[in-house]
Image (cartoon, rainbow, N blue to C red; front, side, top):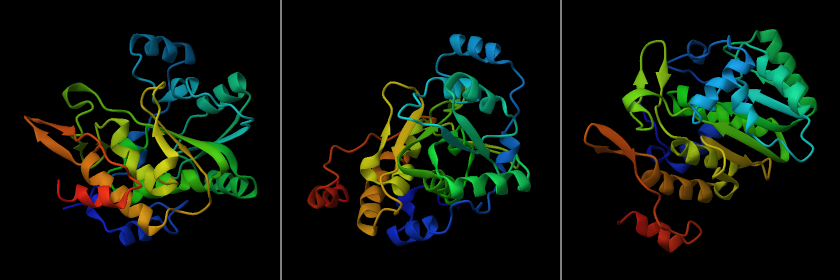
Length: 272
């Protein structure tokens, strides 16, 4: 049975997964290419649809429209940005920002190598991940994706992760749907909060209260969290991330009322 939560791994195993994973694609049971589609609708059509469905803000130009790219941001890397250049054109025209796209499933090897070289020479001011975490079934691949986002961004920069919570009766329940060709987590953004914390640090990641479906992470250092901090994140993950059966659906457990910097309180979680 596939492990799917941080709490199912030891701190040392998590650190091993995080090391040397940036810009790499661990084996996935489902390729992200099958979940990506080119944006055939015009910008106007996308915004009109967003007015009808205001919670659907995780793809296309709409995904970029409500993020405040401020503070001298000139270059943004979109990791897993798909085949289309529509977002790139939108960002240049409306925000004066150069959007680079790195996507090993939907862009050519030549394109991806050129983008990687460009980022290595000059790190991005910010980075984005739009509706990617929710279509990756393997935690190793999700952590590799998050690590790529972090390492591509300059210290002090912000990274923005949007998560689509699915549709139909499984929307937001955490009841994943997986076939041989596609995967959808059907989970809210907070489901992936601790996986992002494992890369950026416990205190550097938050669920945005103003923009729906958005997690914001600040890169405060080039270093990954130490073993002790990973252990704290693991403990919190065991209470926040694993769903519990509620009739026919899964409901994410609420975060525990605990001071994450207090070792005694963290230890007590194991006995509650």
